[in-house]
Length: 266
Ligand code: 4H4
Image 1 (cartoon, rainbow, N blue to C red):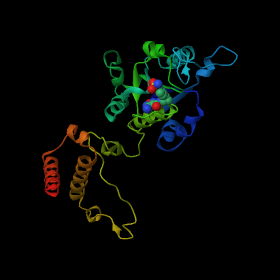
Image 2: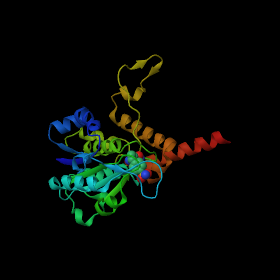
Image 3: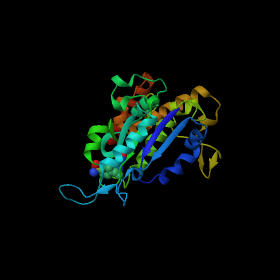
Image 4: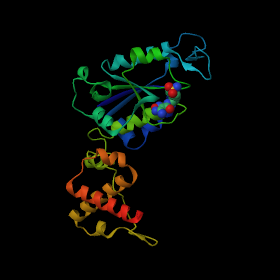
């Protein structure tokens, strides 16, 4: 079972996500467990204050440390070995390799691995920031890794927390309908983008499905799909192509693409 705790001022934001589709079924079946913890429940003043003005001045508010520290402690009573992740634009960029590490069902010895590499068997606490962020002393003392889902600023880290839960949970055994689905996704084991997908009708106006896909020739289909994955990655994400695990055939496709590009440039 994958165990998560999300520390959030807006738990309702996650309820729809946790009851729909693949993730909803995983929660329903007990493969994934997500506890929602609201720092407002760990305040001691009459106004249940969770934020305050920043020292040093400047716009916006900062999430106060004590309610967050108490929330983390509450999460860790259920998951004492959990990895604590803070979602923030200032964090390490999330990628599929990190997701695969976390989703690995074999419990690694968490004590000697980097926080961003620890297995999910110990659980994960996700802190969803709001306002301008959280008091830095929480990060220094209680956060194992800061993770960003992209170079942009959201109004809250809840969406980022859902991204992490979704990406990790769908790799857990038994969560996806077909175990091969995840392996063939973009950023799969070879690091390539996924090939195009088609379904009925076979003809959509003038646009027909590529013949090979209705040929029944599984070898030809696999070859076509791999070629299209290499072409797409070459066209859209040369950074991924540079790191991808390519076969000799893949490299020939790349050379053909480069020759065609060079020819059209002259
Ligand atoms: C946190 C905004 C920290 C600014 C936040 C900062 C992301 C993201 C995000 C609500 C919260 C925002 N979370 N990836 N991108 N001052 N979270 O935008 O540290 O820059 O994950 S700050």
